Length: 498
Image 1 (cartoon, rainbow, N blue to C red):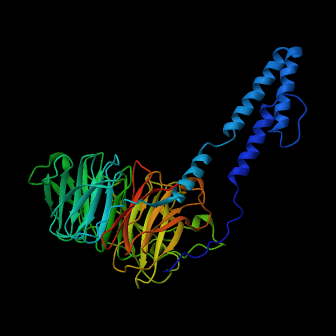
Image 2: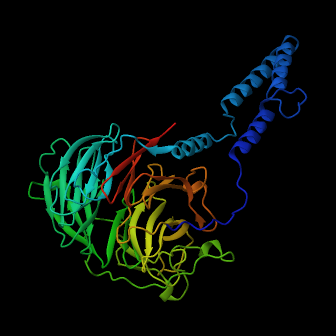
Image 3: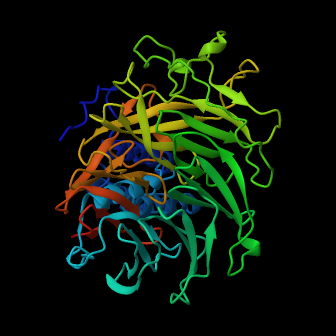
């Protein structure tokens, strides 16, 4: 297995415990009575001595002594619970999260599908309320489990006529599945004996599903290069109205940002397409967008400015080096990027997996080299607030902020990674197991630990619980739990172990 390269030191990091003590000392100075200051370490015996002195002094100084007593007592209370006014409560949350996820282990009652002929696990999806875990299987079936008890709920036998690739919940009861049989199926948890309806419109394997909660449009993409929208407001047993929204060659994955303002499309040729100011109700001229080749920007170096450290092409006056935007309408304007991959200056790459940060701050890519001998997980920040550029340049570009090299196993299979619900952690398939990755050792928010230079993702924990290559992973939206599925059909559930 290949492993990530050692990270370069970015300078000493502040110890949150030491900062907390220093800030509490500042709080002590601001809230203690006006008696002469004691030496450091006065939080113990000396502190109680000051308390007695303040109490005794209250008989001679009246309200002043009482005020000093109250002030000191308030400080002791704050010190006891570690909540001075200068202490950020989120620090305790960071430390708790780190300890919690560092202790994650496979549950003893994990779901084991290898005893039956379901085939590989291609996708996992929790219902929004976390009450159901659905499993997309290679051999035409969809399985449903209770993730808390690991009990089997239902098997949708012959849910499709070919491999089931992806599952997407529309709400707590309705979900959609897509397959290599070129169809999409809608299901209702309250009536699983039959499909709500089948949707026909793709000409090749359907690989992923998105849902616009504002317009209630289902959005699907497939290896035919088409992105199709389906109006679920008007579905019947025979299907629902649909239209071809977009087309491009070499399409791999399509995602919507959480606010549905952008659509991102990854390709096997290494391009990342972004549709800005997304309006799924507008009809686009399908095929009018062609992929424009843009020269890659070199990787950031010590001497480069922060503004040039971008995951996309370098912005210069030469139009050949611009990422391109097409489309005259202010809505659905297209940007084409070639995200830079560490160590891949001259060779192309394939963007096999694409995920969005739950708060829309960044995109998460799993990339492989054209030779298929290296894999990386990369995080690119959306640069919405960048300075104005010439009219031909994009309003938004991506900057590579974090990356890590992955195990180069299971060639030819797509490995689906995911963000945790709060976006602080990444779960990435790694050989016969998974890795929990964070932006720093404290599991901080991306915006709180944004590096000046591209940095390595921090490994919080590695867990190897499978006997075959792991293909997919997913965090529960409501519980401290995540799941992974492998090529031999086993699903592992992970929870804290104390």
